[in-house]
Amino acid sequence: MRKLIFGMNLTLDGYIAAPGDDIGWSGGPSDELFQWWLGYELAIGTSLYGRKLWEAMSSYWPTGDQQPDATPAQIEFARNWRDTPKVVFSSTVEKVDWNTRLVTGDAVAEITRLKAGDGGPLSIGGATLAGAAVRAGLVDEYLLVTHPVLVGGGTPFFTALDSWVNLNLVETRTFPGGVVLTRYETR
Image 1 (spheres, rainbow, N blue to C red):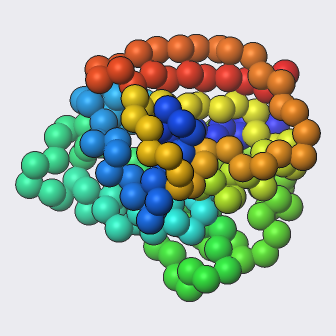
Image 2 (tube, rainbow, N blue to C red; image 1 turned 90 degrees about the vertical axis):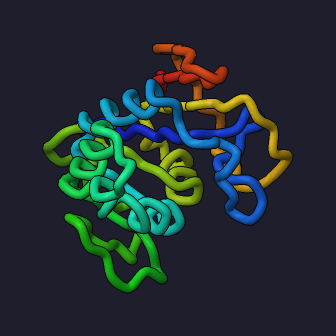
């Protein structure tokens, strides 16, 4: 059984985006945090995206290694992003590219099927998609990369749950700027 990991950057008050889908509050990761995200992504077998996160990632990373100011880590991240198998869950996206396939049907059924298959861990991103996986009891690990900013509203990291999810703390780590990684596994 493959592990399903839900991890994203979020504000101290629990939002992945401020009102208007604004993610400018993060100010971009420090080199150390970016390197950590790169290591995380290199270990992922397949990335699962909701529409909004797909649109954000696919608008930059296909050519991120060709940017004039790209660091070696950004170059490696872009190459890995293109090479990693990806699944986009959307009823409105019409075309995907870069080693990606589109699922327009039942996301929970497809995620369940992927978890039962062979391969490395699955990462899931996007609040709506991840919320469906959380409610279905499919998420095995949570990675919260919390930035010291309050935005007061927007898109929450966690959506409404049908029941409690008990977690075990696995790791905490502090990055420059007061950014804190917290990793939990389900019990």
